[in-house]
Length: 108
Image (cartoon, rainbow, N blue to C red; front, side, top):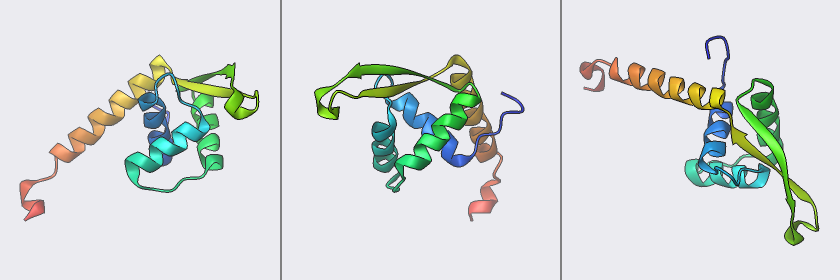
């Protein structure tokens, strides 16, 4: 993953795609982020982040089936790629390492 920079929002979107495994489409990702983080996000911002993540090879997408609730339109479903999973693991490891490096006296 070295060389691939992920901003905070991209990381959050990538995590939401992983959480919604198998059912990660734009509106569901927005709902997941809002529920998990108690933070309002726009569908447009999520779609922009998804496009960047796809360009970086961290997510893949395919068209889902048509649904009556969407007037017969299809959803674009996103999945985390193997590269995306490795990126998330590296991010988690780095964050934990940095948290562990905070001196105990810093919290006094």
